[in-house]
Length: 410
Ligand SMILES: Cc1cc2nc3c(=O)[nH]c(=O)nc-3n(C[C@H](O)[C@H](O)[C@H](O)COP(=O)(O)OP(=O)(O)OC[C@H]3O[C@@H](n4cnc5c(N)ncnc54)[C@H](O)[C@@H]3O)c2cc1C
Image (cartoon, rainbow, N blue to C red; front, side):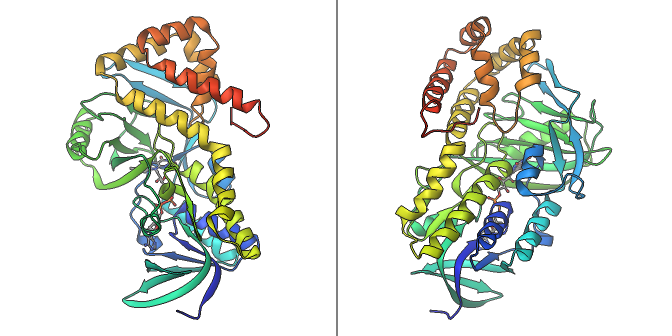
Protein backbone atom coordinates (compact mmCIF):
# COMPACT_ATOMS: atom_id res chain seq x y z
CA UNK A 1 0.00 0.00 0.00
CA UNK A 2 1.25 3.47 -0.84
CA UNK A 3 2.21 6.04 1.74
CA UNK A 4 0.05 8.79 0.39
CA UNK A 5 -3.15 9.30 2.29
CA UNK A 6 -6.13 11.56 1.53
CA UNK A 7 -9.56 12.00 3.08
CA UNK A 8 -11.20 12.02 -0.35
CA UNK A 9 -9.99 10.86 -3.78
CA UNK A 10 -11.98 11.97 -6.82
CA UNK A 11 -11.66 10.05 -10.09
CA UNK A 12 -12.43 12.26 -13.09
CA UNK A 13 -11.71 15.93 -13.68
CA UNK A 14 -14.90 16.83 -15.59
CA UNK A 15 -17.36 19.33 -14.10
CA UNK A 16 -18.82 16.86 -11.59
CA UNK A 17 -15.40 15.74 -10.32
CA UNK A 18 -13.97 19.26 -10.13
CA UNK A 19 -16.96 20.61 -8.22
CA UNK A 20 -17.15 17.61 -5.87
CA UNK A 21 -13.42 17.89 -5.13
CA UNK A 22 -13.52 21.67 -4.53
CA UNK A 23 -16.54 21.30 -2.25
CA UNK A 24 -14.92 18.53 -0.19
CA UNK A 25 -11.75 20.64 0.18
CA UNK A 26 -13.77 23.67 1.25
CA UNK A 27 -15.36 21.46 3.89
CA UNK A 28 -11.97 20.71 5.38
CA UNK A 29 -11.01 17.45 3.64
CA UNK A 30 -7.64 16.68 2.09
CA UNK A 31 -8.52 15.88 -1.52
CA UNK A 32 -6.80 14.26 -4.51
CA UNK A 33 -8.34 14.53 -7.97
CA UNK A 34 -7.03 12.34 -10.78
CA UNK A 35 -7.82 12.95 -14.45
CA UNK A 36 -6.57 10.63 -17.15
CA UNK A 37 -6.51 13.22 -19.94
CA UNK A 38 -4.60 16.45 -20.47
CA UNK A 39 -7.52 18.81 -19.81
CA UNK A 40 -6.37 21.40 -22.37
CA UNK A 41 -6.39 18.70 -25.08
CA UNK A 42 -9.53 16.79 -24.13
CA UNK A 43 -12.02 16.67 -27.03
CA UNK A 44 -15.23 18.54 -26.23
CA UNK A 45 -18.18 16.14 -26.42
CA UNK A 46 -20.85 18.63 -25.51
CA UNK A 47 -23.12 21.25 -27.07
CA UNK A 48 -22.61 23.51 -24.09
CA UNK A 49 -26.23 24.64 -23.84
CA UNK A 50 -27.01 25.37 -20.20
CA UNK A 51 -29.33 27.46 -18.07
CA UNK A 52 -28.02 30.58 -16.33
CA UNK A 53 -28.78 28.63 -13.15
CA UNK A 54 -26.03 26.19 -14.12
CA UNK A 55 -23.41 28.94 -14.16
CA UNK A 56 -24.69 30.16 -10.77
CA UNK A 57 -24.45 26.64 -9.31
CA UNK A 58 -20.93 26.35 -10.69
CA UNK A 59 -20.05 29.74 -9.19
CA UNK A 60 -19.02 31.11 -12.60
CA UNK A 61 -19.89 34.67 -13.59
CA UNK A 62 -21.71 34.97 -16.89
CA UNK A 63 -19.03 37.50 -17.93
CA UNK A 64 -16.12 35.10 -17.20
CA UNK A 65 -15.43 34.64 -20.93
CA UNK A 66 -17.29 31.36 -20.87
CA UNK A 67 -20.55 32.46 -22.48
CA UNK A 68 -20.42 32.49 -26.27
CA UNK A 69 -24.06 33.31 -26.90
CA UNK A 70 -27.34 34.00 -25.15
CA UNK A 71 -30.33 31.97 -26.24
CA UNK A 72 -33.88 33.29 -26.00
CA UNK A 73 -35.88 30.59 -27.75
CA UNK A 74 -36.13 27.55 -29.98
CA UNK A 75 -37.52 26.56 -33.36
CA UNK A 76 -38.84 23.02 -33.20
CA UNK A 77 -39.28 21.19 -36.51
CA UNK A 78 -41.78 18.32 -36.81
CA UNK A 79 -40.89 15.39 -39.09
CA UNK A 80 -43.20 16.91 -41.74
CA UNK A 81 -41.24 20.20 -41.60
CA UNK A 82 -43.83 22.22 -39.65
CA UNK A 83 -42.05 24.76 -37.47
CA UNK A 84 -42.98 25.78 -33.97
CA UNK A 85 -41.40 28.96 -32.66
CA UNK A 86 -40.87 29.13 -28.92
CA UNK A 87 -39.59 31.76 -26.54
CA UNK A 88 -38.08 35.06 -27.52
CA UNK A 89 -37.46 38.10 -25.36
CA UNK A 90 -35.55 37.14 -22.26
CA UNK A 91 -32.44 34.95 -22.05
CA UNK A 92 -33.43 31.37 -21.26
CA UNK A 93 -30.12 29.60 -21.78
CA UNK A 94 -26.54 30.26 -22.81
CA UNK A 95 -24.06 28.50 -25.06
CA UNK A 96 -20.74 28.09 -23.29
CA UNK A 97 -17.15 27.36 -24.20
CA UNK A 98 -17.16 23.94 -22.56
CA UNK A 99 -13.40 23.54 -22.50
CA UNK A 100 -12.91 26.86 -20.76
CA UNK A 101 -15.72 26.00 -18.34
CA UNK A 102 -14.03 22.71 -17.38
CA UNK A 103 -10.62 24.37 -17.03
CA UNK A 104 -12.05 27.10 -14.80
CA UNK A 105 -13.67 24.51 -12.54
CA UNK A 106 -10.41 22.54 -12.28
CA UNK A 107 -8.56 25.76 -11.43
CA UNK A 108 -11.15 26.48 -8.72
CA UNK A 109 -10.51 23.04 -7.29
CA UNK A 110 -6.75 23.72 -7.22
CA UNK A 111 -7.33 27.05 -5.51
CA UNK A 112 -9.52 25.32 -2.92
CA UNK A 113 -6.52 23.14 -2.05
CA UNK A 114 -7.22 20.03 -4.14
CA UNK A 115 -4.17 18.10 -5.32
CA UNK A 116 -5.00 17.82 -9.04
CA UNK A 117 -3.05 15.23 -11.03
CA UNK A 118 -3.65 15.07 -14.75
CA UNK A 119 -2.54 12.29 -17.14
CA UNK A 120 -3.20 10.02 -14.19
CA UNK A 121 -5.59 7.12 -14.62
CA UNK A 122 -7.32 5.18 -11.86
CA UNK A 123 -6.72 1.54 -12.86
CA UNK A 124 -8.15 -0.33 -9.90
CA UNK A 125 -9.37 -0.31 -6.31
CA UNK A 126 -7.23 -1.85 -3.60
CA UNK A 127 -9.06 -2.06 -0.30
CA UNK A 128 -9.36 1.56 0.84
CA UNK A 129 -6.90 2.54 -1.88
CA UNK A 130 -6.87 3.58 -5.47
CA UNK A 131 -4.34 2.15 -7.90
CA UNK A 132 -3.09 4.86 -10.25
CA UNK A 133 -1.10 4.88 -13.45
CA UNK A 134 0.86 7.95 -14.49
CA UNK A 135 2.90 7.61 -17.68
CA UNK A 136 3.28 3.87 -17.11
CA UNK A 137 4.27 4.15 -13.44
CA UNK A 138 1.86 2.58 -10.97
CA UNK A 139 1.24 3.74 -7.42
CA UNK A 140 -1.43 3.35 -4.77
CA UNK A 141 -2.97 6.11 -2.69
CA UNK A 142 -5.20 5.57 0.30
CA UNK A 143 -8.47 7.48 0.65
CA UNK A 144 -11.28 7.25 3.16
CA UNK A 145 -13.87 8.10 0.49
CA UNK A 146 -13.58 7.69 -3.28
CA UNK A 147 -15.86 9.76 -5.53
CA UNK A 148 -16.42 8.19 -8.94
CA UNK A 149 -16.90 11.15 -11.30
CA UNK A 150 -15.46 9.20 -14.21
CA UNK A 151 -18.28 9.76 -16.68
CA UNK A 152 -20.27 7.24 -18.76
CA UNK A 153 -19.33 3.58 -18.28
CA UNK A 154 -17.78 4.43 -14.89
CA UNK A 155 -14.98 2.04 -13.97
CA UNK A 156 -15.42 2.93 -10.30
CA UNK A 157 -19.04 1.75 -10.53
CA UNK A 158 -17.95 -1.47 -12.25
CA UNK A 159 -15.21 -2.23 -9.72
CA UNK A 160 -17.66 -1.69 -6.86
CA UNK A 161 -20.43 -3.75 -8.52
CA UNK A 162 -22.76 -0.74 -8.63
CA UNK A 163 -25.54 -0.98 -11.24
CA UNK A 164 -25.38 0.95 -14.53
CA UNK A 165 -27.67 3.83 -15.51
CA UNK A 166 -30.89 2.70 -17.16
CA UNK A 167 -30.14 3.75 -20.75
CA UNK A 168 -27.28 4.96 -22.88
CA UNK A 169 -27.71 7.39 -25.76
CA UNK A 170 -25.03 8.31 -28.26
CA UNK A 171 -24.47 11.91 -29.24
CA UNK A 172 -22.71 12.87 -32.49
CA UNK A 173 -21.76 16.45 -33.15
CA UNK A 174 -19.82 18.66 -35.50
CA UNK A 175 -19.17 22.39 -35.73
CA UNK A 176 -19.91 24.02 -39.04
CA UNK A 177 -20.35 27.34 -40.80
CA UNK A 178 -24.10 27.92 -40.57
CA UNK A 179 -26.37 30.95 -40.37
CA UNK A 180 -29.50 30.04 -38.45
CA UNK A 181 -32.74 31.95 -39.07
CA UNK A 182 -32.47 33.41 -35.56
CA UNK A 183 -29.05 33.91 -34.01
CA UNK A 184 -30.49 33.69 -30.50
CA UNK A 185 -32.48 30.50 -31.01
CA UNK A 186 -31.62 26.81 -31.11
CA UNK A 187 -33.18 24.57 -33.76
CA UNK A 188 -34.54 21.18 -32.74
CA UNK A 189 -35.41 18.52 -35.33
CA UNK A 190 -37.71 15.62 -34.53
CA UNK A 191 -38.34 12.40 -36.43
CA UNK A 192 -37.00 9.00 -37.39
CA UNK A 193 -35.15 10.27 -40.48
CA UNK A 194 -32.78 12.49 -38.50
CA UNK A 195 -32.74 11.31 -34.89
CA UNK A 196 -34.80 8.21 -34.10
CA UNK A 197 -35.94 8.09 -30.44
CA UNK A 198 -34.36 11.45 -29.52
CA UNK A 199 -33.71 14.67 -31.45
CA UNK A 200 -31.21 16.57 -33.56
CA UNK A 201 -30.05 20.15 -33.03
CA UNK A 202 -28.34 23.20 -34.49
CA UNK A 203 -27.05 25.48 -31.74
CA UNK A 204 -25.48 28.82 -32.70
CA UNK A 205 -22.05 29.54 -31.17
CA UNK A 206 -19.65 32.14 -32.62
CA UNK A 207 -21.19 34.38 -35.34
CA UNK A 208 -21.65 32.35 -38.51
CA UNK A 209 -21.00 29.01 -36.80
CA UNK A 210 -23.20 26.40 -35.13
CA UNK A 211 -22.89 23.14 -33.25
CA UNK A 212 -24.85 20.58 -35.24
CA UNK A 213 -25.60 17.18 -33.79
CA UNK A 214 -28.02 14.51 -32.74
CA UNK A 215 -28.68 11.93 -30.08
CA UNK A 216 -30.03 8.45 -30.64
CA UNK A 217 -29.78 4.83 -29.47
CA UNK A 218 -26.31 3.21 -29.67
CA UNK A 219 -27.61 0.62 -32.16
CA UNK A 220 -28.50 3.22 -34.81
CA UNK A 221 -26.29 4.62 -37.53
CA UNK A 222 -25.79 8.03 -35.94
CA UNK A 223 -23.07 8.94 -38.43
CA UNK A 224 -25.45 8.51 -41.36
CA UNK A 225 -28.15 10.51 -39.60
CA UNK A 226 -25.67 13.33 -39.03
CA UNK A 227 -24.75 13.31 -42.73
CA UNK A 228 -28.47 13.53 -43.56
CA UNK A 229 -28.88 16.45 -41.15
CA UNK A 230 -25.91 18.30 -42.64
CA UNK A 231 -27.31 17.77 -46.14
CA UNK A 232 -30.71 19.02 -45.05
CA UNK A 233 -29.14 22.18 -43.64
CA UNK A 234 -26.99 22.70 -46.74
CA UNK A 235 -23.74 22.29 -44.81
CA UNK A 236 -20.81 21.11 -46.90
CA UNK A 237 -17.79 21.88 -44.70
CA UNK A 238 -18.25 20.49 -41.19
CA UNK A 239 -15.17 20.86 -38.96
CA UNK A 240 -14.40 17.63 -37.16
CA UNK A 241 -16.66 15.18 -35.44
CA UNK A 242 -17.09 14.25 -31.81
CA UNK A 243 -19.09 11.38 -30.40
CA UNK A 244 -19.98 10.70 -26.81
CA UNK A 245 -22.23 8.63 -24.62
CA UNK A 246 -25.04 10.11 -22.56
CA UNK A 247 -26.23 7.85 -19.73
CA UNK A 248 -29.78 8.60 -18.61
CA UNK A 249 -31.92 7.22 -15.80
CA UNK A 250 -30.00 6.91 -12.52
CA UNK A 251 -29.37 3.36 -11.28
CA UNK A 252 -31.06 2.23 -8.07
CA UNK A 253 -27.89 2.81 -6.02
CA UNK A 254 -25.15 5.41 -6.31
CA UNK A 255 -23.20 4.60 -3.10
CA UNK A 256 -21.29 1.59 -1.80
CA UNK A 257 -18.83 1.13 1.05
CA UNK A 258 -16.20 3.85 0.66
CA UNK A 259 -17.50 5.02 -2.74
CA UNK A 260 -20.05 7.38 -4.18
CA UNK A 261 -20.85 8.17 -7.82
CA UNK A 262 -21.70 11.54 -9.29
CA UNK A 263 -22.53 13.13 -12.66
CA UNK A 264 -22.68 10.91 -15.75
CA UNK A 265 -21.22 8.05 -13.71
CA UNK A 266 -24.47 8.16 -11.71
CA UNK A 267 -26.79 8.63 -14.73
CA UNK A 268 -27.80 12.08 -13.47
CA UNK A 269 -28.22 13.76 -16.91
CA UNK A 270 -31.69 15.03 -17.77
CA UNK A 271 -33.38 12.32 -19.86
CA UNK A 272 -35.43 14.73 -21.99
CA UNK A 273 -32.42 16.70 -23.27
CA UNK A 274 -29.30 14.72 -22.33
CA UNK A 275 -28.01 17.79 -20.49
CA UNK A 276 -25.90 16.69 -17.56
CA UNK A 277 -24.09 19.81 -16.41
CA UNK A 278 -26.73 21.37 -14.16
CA UNK A 279 -27.74 18.13 -12.44
CA UNK A 280 -24.15 16.86 -12.21
CA UNK A 281 -22.95 20.05 -10.53
CA UNK A 282 -25.86 20.17 -8.07
CA UNK A 283 -25.20 16.55 -7.07
CA UNK A 284 -21.42 17.09 -6.96
CA UNK A 285 -21.78 19.74 -4.28
CA UNK A 286 -23.77 17.31 -2.15
CA UNK A 287 -21.24 14.55 -2.86
CA UNK A 288 -18.32 16.76 -1.78
CA UNK A 289 -20.04 17.78 1.44
CA UNK A 290 -21.06 14.26 2.42
CA UNK A 291 -17.66 12.80 1.52
CA UNK A 292 -15.84 15.40 3.64
CA UNK A 293 -18.24 14.87 6.53
CA UNK A 294 -17.94 11.06 6.44
CA UNK A 295 -14.14 11.26 6.18
CA UNK A 296 -14.00 13.57 9.21
CA UNK A 297 -16.16 11.19 11.23
CA UNK A 298 -14.14 8.23 10.04
CA UNK A 299 -17.24 6.43 8.82
CA UNK A 300 -17.32 5.77 5.09
CA UNK A 301 -19.60 2.75 5.09
CA UNK A 302 -22.45 2.72 2.58
CA UNK A 303 -24.95 3.47 5.36
CA UNK A 304 -23.15 6.73 6.19
CA UNK A 305 -22.60 7.74 2.55
CA UNK A 306 -26.31 7.11 1.91
CA UNK A 307 -26.85 10.69 3.15
CA UNK A 308 -25.62 11.71 -0.34
CA UNK A 309 -28.07 9.39 -2.08
CA UNK A 310 -30.97 10.66 0.04
CA UNK A 311 -30.13 14.32 -0.49
CA UNK A 312 -29.66 14.27 -4.24
CA UNK A 313 -32.73 12.11 -4.85
CA UNK A 314 -34.82 14.41 -2.68
CA UNK A 315 -33.75 17.35 -4.82
CA UNK A 316 -33.77 15.80 -8.31
CA UNK A 317 -35.06 12.23 -8.13
CA UNK A 318 -38.65 12.97 -9.12
CA UNK A 319 -37.66 15.36 -11.88
CA UNK A 320 -35.35 12.70 -13.37
CA UNK A 321 -38.07 10.03 -13.01
CA UNK A 322 -40.51 12.34 -14.81
CA UNK A 323 -37.88 13.00 -17.49
CA UNK A 324 -37.25 9.29 -18.00
CA UNK A 325 -40.96 8.58 -18.46
CA UNK A 326 -41.33 11.55 -20.84
CA UNK A 327 -38.24 10.39 -22.79
CA UNK A 328 -39.58 6.84 -23.17
CA UNK A 329 -42.97 8.16 -24.22
CA UNK A 330 -41.54 10.47 -26.88
CA UNK A 331 -39.14 7.78 -28.07
CA UNK A 332 -42.07 5.42 -28.66
CA UNK A 333 -44.02 7.83 -30.90
CA UNK A 334 -44.28 7.48 -34.67
CA UNK A 335 -43.46 10.39 -36.97
CA UNK A 336 -47.20 10.85 -37.54
CA UNK A 337 -47.77 11.23 -33.78
CA UNK A 338 -44.87 13.69 -33.48
CA UNK A 339 -46.43 15.74 -36.30
CA UNK A 340 -49.71 15.80 -34.40
CA UNK A 341 -48.02 16.81 -31.17
CA UNK A 342 -46.21 19.72 -32.81
CA UNK A 343 -49.55 20.82 -34.33
CA UNK A 344 -51.18 20.54 -30.89
CA UNK A 345 -48.45 22.64 -29.27
CA UNK A 346 -48.84 25.33 -31.94
CA UNK A 347 -51.78 26.81 -30.06
CA UNK A 348 -51.75 30.30 -28.48
CA UNK A 349 -52.73 29.03 -25.03
CA UNK A 350 -49.98 26.39 -24.98
CA UNK A 351 -47.37 28.71 -26.46
CA UNK A 352 -48.10 31.19 -23.67
CA UNK A 353 -47.59 28.44 -21.09
CA UNK A 354 -44.37 27.25 -22.74
CA UNK A 355 -43.00 30.77 -22.92
CA UNK A 356 -43.87 31.42 -19.28
CA UNK A 357 -43.05 28.09 -17.64
CA UNK A 358 -40.68 26.26 -20.01
CA UNK A 359 -37.50 25.48 -18.06
CA UNK A 360 -34.72 23.32 -19.52
CA UNK A 361 -33.76 22.07 -16.06
CA UNK A 362 -37.29 21.17 -14.92
CA UNK A 363 -39.62 20.16 -17.76
CA UNK A 364 -42.16 18.87 -15.23
CA UNK A 365 -43.09 22.47 -14.34
CA UNK A 366 -44.61 22.97 -17.79
CA UNK A 367 -46.30 19.56 -17.73
CA UNK A 368 -47.94 20.52 -14.43
CA UNK A 369 -49.30 23.72 -15.98
CA UNK A 370 -50.77 21.85 -18.95
CA UNK A 371 -52.36 19.47 -16.47
CA UNK A 372 -54.05 22.35 -14.72
CA UNK A 373 -55.99 23.23 -17.89
CA UNK A 374 -58.68 20.54 -18.34
CA UNK A 375 -59.19 21.55 -21.98
CA UNK A 376 -55.49 21.22 -22.87
CA UNK A 377 -55.08 18.04 -20.88
CA UNK A 378 -58.06 16.37 -22.62
CA UNK A 379 -56.53 17.26 -25.99
CA UNK A 380 -53.11 15.94 -24.93
CA UNK A 381 -54.51 12.61 -23.76
CA UNK A 382 -56.62 12.25 -26.91
CA UNK A 383 -53.33 12.51 -28.87
CA UNK A 384 -51.16 10.37 -26.63
CA UNK A 385 -53.14 8.19 -24.21
CA UNK A 386 -49.90 7.12 -22.46
CA UNK A 387 -49.58 10.72 -21.21
CA UNK A 388 -51.84 9.53 -18.35
CA UNK A 389 -48.72 7.94 -16.85
CA UNK A 390 -47.06 11.34 -16.67
CA UNK A 391 -50.11 12.73 -14.91
CA UNK A 392 -50.05 9.88 -12.38
CA UNK A 393 -46.37 10.53 -11.66
CA UNK A 394 -46.96 14.27 -11.24
CA UNK A 395 -49.96 13.63 -8.97
CA UNK A 396 -47.97 11.26 -6.78
CA UNK A 397 -45.20 13.88 -6.63
CA UNK A 398 -47.66 16.51 -5.47
CA UNK A 399 -48.94 14.26 -2.68
CA UNK A 400 -45.40 13.54 -1.56
CA UNK A 401 -44.52 17.21 -1.79
CA UNK A 402 -47.06 18.04 0.88
CA UNK A 403 -45.34 15.60 3.23
CA UNK A 404 -42.45 17.24 5.12
CA UNK A 405 -40.02 14.49 4.02
CA UNK A 406 -40.17 15.30 0.31
CA UNK A 407 -39.08 18.47 -1.42
CA UNK A 408 -39.92 18.13 -5.09
CA UNK A 409 -38.75 20.98 -7.24
CA UNK A 410 -41.75 22.58 -8.92
C1 LIG B 1 -22.84 15.18 -27.91
C2 LIG B 1 -23.13 15.62 -26.49
C3 LIG B 1 -23.73 16.87 -26.28
C4 LIG B 1 -24.01 17.28 -24.96
N1 LIG B 1 -24.58 18.52 -24.77
C5 LIG B 1 -24.84 18.96 -23.51
C6 LIG B 1 -25.38 20.26 -23.29
O1 LIG B 1 -25.63 21.02 -24.23
N2 LIG B 1 -25.64 20.64 -22.01
C7 LIG B 1 -25.37 19.83 -20.94
O2 LIG B 1 -25.66 20.22 -19.78
N3 LIG B 1 -24.84 18.59 -21.12
C8 LIG B 1 -24.57 18.14 -22.38
N4 LIG B 1 -24.03 16.88 -22.57
C9 LIG B 1 -23.77 16.05 -21.40
C10 LIG B 1 -22.53 16.54 -20.65
O3 LIG B 1 -21.44 16.64 -21.54
C11 LIG B 1 -22.21 15.53 -19.53
O4 LIG B 1 -23.38 15.30 -18.77
C12 LIG B 1 -21.10 16.05 -18.61
O5 LIG B 1 -19.87 16.11 -19.28
C13 LIG B 1 -20.95 15.13 -17.39
O6 LIG B 1 -19.91 15.60 -16.58
P1 LIG B 1 -19.10 14.56 -15.68
O7 LIG B 1 -18.09 15.38 -14.95
O8 LIG B 1 -20.04 13.70 -14.93
O9 LIG B 1 -18.38 13.58 -16.70
P2 LIG B 1 -17.28 13.90 -17.81
O10 LIG B 1 -17.39 15.29 -18.29
O11 LIG B 1 -17.41 12.78 -18.81
O12 LIG B 1 -15.90 13.76 -17.04
C14 LIG B 1 -15.40 12.50 -16.65
C15 LIG B 1 -13.90 12.62 -16.60
O13 LIG B 1 -13.36 11.44 -16.02
C16 LIG B 1 -12.15 11.14 -16.68
N5 LIG B 1 -11.89 9.71 -16.43
C17 LIG B 1 -12.63 8.65 -16.84
N6 LIG B 1 -12.11 7.51 -16.36
C18 LIG B 1 -11.02 7.85 -15.63
C19 LIG B 1 -10.06 7.10 -14.89
N7 LIG B 1 -10.14 5.76 -14.82
N8 LIG B 1 -9.06 7.76 -14.26
C20 LIG B 1 -8.98 9.13 -14.34
N9 LIG B 1 -9.87 9.87 -15.03
C21 LIG B 1 -10.88 9.25 -15.66
C22 LIG B 1 -12.43 11.49 -18.13
O14 LIG B 1 -11.24 11.72 -18.85
C23 LIG B 1 -13.26 12.75 -17.97
O15 LIG B 1 -12.48 13.92 -18.00
C24 LIG B 1 -23.73 16.43 -23.86
C25 LIG B 1 -23.14 15.18 -24.09
C26 LIG B 1 -22.84 14.78 -25.39
C27 LIG B 1 -22.21 13.42 -25.60
